[in-house]
Image 1 (cartoon, rainbow, N blue to C red):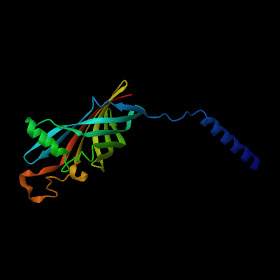
Image 2: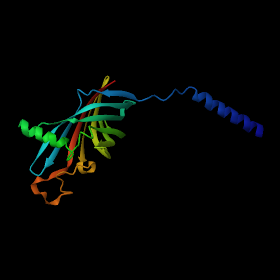
Image 3: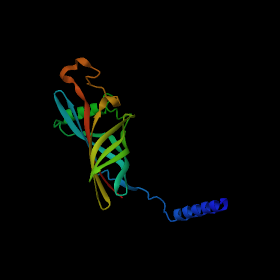
Length: 202
């Protein structure tokens, strides 16, 4: 009886080994390189008396696709490329951008880039996804989740997502009522939005 059990065990092991021999190695995710010339970050910040908007260039990045679905990605933003698109007076515009680059805001001399790294992708049906990742600004990293639309056509991916960030979590406190109570209508709201538009190809 023991001999039969032993032989049966050997047969089972042999079957498992032979079956595994026919299973190929796991298919790796496909890498799509971000086209910096066709990609952009649009930003918008509001204050008590109005709002400002503009762009920041995407310097590089990749998107990962596995099984025809977005699975990950990382990208870098050139903070020194920040532009304002609503101020028409050249002098005031230059002054505004200078302030944005200063230590009061993004301190681009010390932190010339910001990054976003995808940590989780949740398909929502069709081209819709929920993207979770780590946003790093001024060397400070916070998790953020936002909805995105991702479309694939041939060798190209286009992705568009909009997130709301709390600037104070990145040590940008200038004009924040959360830290300076008696600033009245000079207050700048803590939340600002970023809309990331990416084009990538393999």
